[in-house]
Amino acid sequence: MKAAPPEPAIYLEALKAAPAVRHPRVTERLVAVAEDRSLATPDRASALDALETQHRFTPETRGRLKAIALDDSADSAAWVATRTLGRVMKEDYERTGTYAPYWKDLLDIGTTSDDTAVRLLALEMPSYSDPLLDSDSIDTLAKVMRTDKERDVREMAAFRLAVTEDPRKALAAYRAAFDGEHDLCVRWAFLRFAVRAAGADALPLVEEFARKDPRLRQDYLDFKALYATGTTDFARIWLGKKEHHDCVVEEGAPH
Image (cartoon, rainbow, N blue to C red; front, top):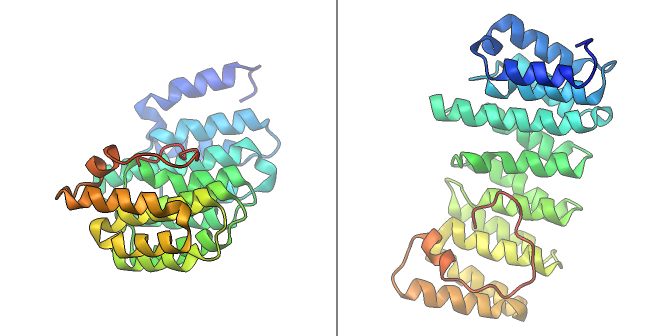
């Protein structure tokens, strides 16, 4: 790591693609580099990036990366630490079905980081493997929808909530958040993700939202007509849905 820029990044990119990167000694060294506050942020970020090809992280390693993600002084390295946790979660989930420990760390980051971009990324990362979220996660995401100061984060929490093992509890969370939310785009997110979570069973709630906010009435009528055709797959429903709001769709969200 004492080479002149940009050589460290080049070496680490090559290491990332090599099986040797998963040797415990190499992994430990990369984590140590990532933790070293005396190094330039890009070098720390490159070390974190090189860790993304790990098959799994031990609880200790996850904890160390989480600490970097929550370090206000880490700058962009905090964002890369969050992304690395998410990408290894995807790898471990695809290999073994394990996601819960990583998701707990990401959820903690998504609710406690002071950096909006880090919070947003932490909540987004499960999108790339879409595990069914457990019921306990709903309470935390529901709080994010009600309290986070950033619109994008509230929308991402709504999106994350749509893939859950407990659609009824998800619908209750959307209902609880709706009245206190005054941004049309976030309300629209609550509506469409309620439909994604529960399909036609969400229509009574969607009708309720439309009564409370007439700007959403056409969305209710659209979804009602689409489900009346007998289609149940949300991907096909979404293809037939017209857009009525000038809202930017959050990156990575398969609406």
